[in-house]
Each structure stands twice: as structure tokens, then as C-alpha cells.
Image (cartoon, rainbow over all chains, first blue to last red; front, side, top):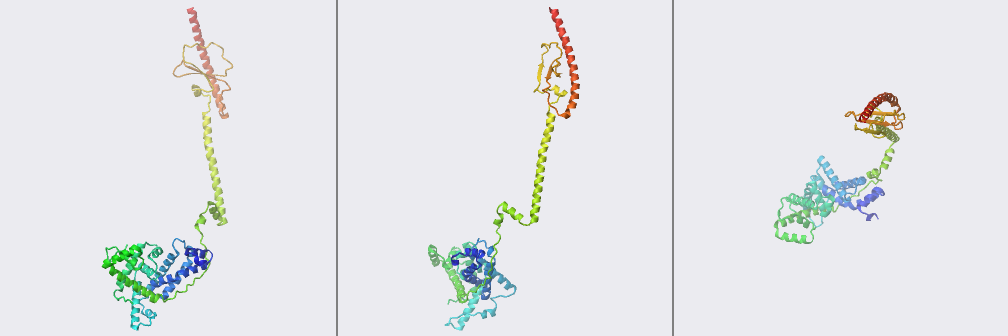
Length: 192
Length: 256
């Protein structure tokens, strides 16, 4: 029965009768919110923390949810704020995730069996480069490119979620791609 | 809208390029852009560059993010307290009053005493306001009441009096009779313009205006003085009449 309810009905149910109805909302959105956090922060542990804090914050503020916006928009906004707060804290601690060579070496990529170690290293470098380029984008551009690439949302869905005009979303994606192209020009994009 | 240092600036296909890149172009828009892509080298170059960036990000996603497990989100479930709705408080004025009195007994006592005080003051003011015009009206009535006074004699009111005007000097004089005892008051006044014009005001005792007790003594004194004057005047007038009458009689005798 709960599965047939809309997000807004689940929120109402969680507030009034059954708090565990919020669990269904978590199930529906946890992967996408995690993808958004990963795209914004580029680190698994930080992305997991941000996703966890996003849902806890949403649950605590459920009574304040007025239903003026969609639940998905509301969750995305909380998630983006969580990610930006984490980045700000990291900057104040002079921690840069992407420049941290130790952390990047610790990352384990599952490489195809038929690839040589040199090729795997090259691929890792390229991925690090892409991650750095995305992370250096301004927050508003990074947000739309992550929603488009990681969450695979349509332009219309992004427009509704961020409550911005469709043309603004396309313009932001265009600008983000152009800036990424300039940043990635140094390293030739290898088509695998 | 899309702008900036676009390779194909001016062709106006930037937005369609983005939609086509993410496979969101449909119908004629897709066909139109594909036709444009064959002609416009700027758009073709940009499309190739953006496709490379899109592929790189997608590659990063597949090789890193796709392998990650979704974290287990733990929510500390607890019953939410429904926030008080402002609309329910707005309600009717009665509910508002109830809420006010439900606050504390001290509040209710203070409010009740204030209301009683305001009501008492209001009633007092109303009584004062209603009395003041009556008092003013009462004084006016007293002043407007007709009293027998010398001025009133000069300009007697038309009502309750029988006024006999004698403007012509040739009119037949009154026959010499003894003064009528039944008439209690006889007022005679001469007009200022003509000595011949005489106004005789006759009023009966019943028609006398009702006076307040406070004014009775003064009026009585005035009345006695006035009556004396009137009597003197009447005697003088009678003497004049008698002389005129005698003169007329003598004239008649002479003519005969």
C-alpha cells in the first residue's frame, strides 16, 4: 500500500501516523541523492556521509515541509546544501580531496582483466583529471552537470527540481561543458 | 539563453545542440539539427568536443560510482509533533476569546474587570450625555414661556388673546359704560408710531399662561404694579372718551 503512495502522501503519513513511511522515501531517492553527493564531492566516504545527513535532516524537518515544492526538489536542495557545507569545512581545514595524492592512491578501481598496468594507470589518471575538472566548476554549474550526468535526469526534471526555467538549465549545462572542455584539453580524451 | 564564446556563435543552435547531445531532441527538432550539423562546421566541432566531455564524465561514473554500493541510511525514527496550525488559531472571535481566557486565571480576572470598568464608564457617559440636552431644553422652555410683562404687552402673542384694533380715528367711540367687572384684565397699549392706534388686549383668567412657582411672586408684584398702571390708563382714557363724547354731543345739539 505504501509503495503506491506519492512522495507527498508519504510525507503526510510520516508526520501524522507512521514515521516509518519516510523509509519508503529513502528507498526511492537514496541512490540518486548518493549520486548527486558523489558527483559534487568526488569522494565515496564524504558522499555517504552527505547522503545520510541529507535524509536525517529531511526527516527532522518533515513537519516544516509545506508541500509547495516537490519532495524530490526539497531533498535535492538539502543534499546540495550538505555538499556545499562539507566543501566549505574542508576548505577551512585546508583539505582538498582532489589534490590529496594519498587518498587518490588508496582508491581501488576494478580494472578489466585484458588491460595492461600502464593502461590502467593512464585510465586512473584520466579519471582523476575529470574528477578535478568537475570539482573545480562553480557550484551552480556543477549541480546541473551532476544531476544530468550522474542522476540522468532530463532537462525538464532538473528545471522542476531547481525551480528554474528550462532555458537556464540548458544554458548552465552548455557553460559547464564548455568549461570542462577547456580544463580537459590538456589531457587528451581517450576513447576507450 | 545560451551565449558566450561559442564556436558556432550566431547560428542559434546552441540549445538544440545540448538537447541533441543528451538525446532529448524529438521529431522535427532532431531532424532539423542533424541537417544543420552537416552544414555548420562550428556546431560539428563543438558537438564533438562536448561528446568527449560527456563520455569522460560518464566513464568516471561507470568506473567509479557504478561500482559503489548505496549507503545504508539509518533514520532515528520518532513520532513527530504536529506543528500548531495558524489557521486554527485564527478561527472565530469566540475561539480567540476562549484561547485568551484559557491562558491563566489572572489574565481572565484582569480582562473581566477591565471589561466591567469600560461598560460602567460607557453607561455613565451615556447618562451624562442624555441629561445635558434636557437641561438646556428646560431652560429654553422657561424662557419661552409667555409671561405677562410690559414687553409682552407691547408685542402680545396672537394666540389666546382677542385683539381689537382701532386704526381709524373716525370710528365710533365706545359708549360710556361702567367698567365691566367680569373682565379681570384690560390691557391698553398705544403704538409708538401713532397715538391713535390702540391695541386692546383682553384675556380671561382661564387663558392666563401657566407659570412656574418660582416666578409667581415676582409676576404677582409685577401684575399689581401693572394693573395699577392699567387702571390709571383706563381712567385717563375714559375721561378722554367722555370729553370726546360730550364734545360730539354738543356738536350734535348745535347742528340740530
